[in-house]
Length: 231
Ligand SMILES: Nc1nc2c(ncn2[C@@H]2O[C@H](COP(=O)(O)OP(=O)(O)OP(=O)(O)O)[C@@H](O)[C@H]2O)c(=O)[nH]1
Ligand SMILES: [Mg+2]
Ligand SMILES: [Zn+2]
Image 1 (tube, helix red, strand yellow):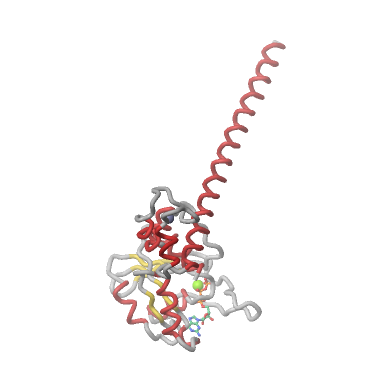
Image 2 (spheres, rainbow, N blue to C red):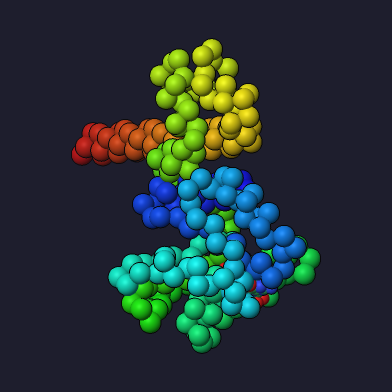
């Protein structure tokens, strides 16, 4: 669930419309429960259960494959992105790989990004499996991925409320009333903290670069003075 929240944040901030595919439902005892669980953090994002391997549930994807539109598949290695491409195209255009026995992780079978044209004119992109979802510059993405928190926040007493311990915090009240799950607010805090940390880090990095540049200039001036002095 927490990883999906990161994906949604990044996909939203990219400007794309997220759709969540729950693949390998042939392996699930209770797919409906899983979909419900995912839907609880997905808001209005569609959640589509399917099996790329046994080709079940693929019809539900058709509203998302429109001529002239581009769809990119993203997810961890081994989730079945390439298998889905093969099933949609009806032929083996991409190599697929097994799952490691010991930790059930994928083997990073796809190593380059590749584009495919579906018969109806939609474009489909297969990507290598994502190892780690870096947030990058995703402040806007967080707002969209956690829209229920942003909505509630409009009723907080303070405009700059951080929803941690402020009086009159409408988000904390919604959590207390059971409207917003506690884990959702915890995720929101974790992701916003991470973004703040990253931007501070890059600021420090910039400052250090600048300092080094000035140091180099000072050294060059010294050298120049020395050389001209000798002349
Ligand atoms: N049981 C089951 N296995 C599946 C399904 N879809 C894919 N697999 C299997 O999962 C494994 C990984 O599939 P891939 O399509 O290579 O996964 P990928 O997401 O492209 O992985 P990378 O290219 O490494 O990022 C293969 O052994 C597939 O046969 C499915 O719907 N059900
Ligand atoms: Mg692949
Ligand atoms: Zn608040």
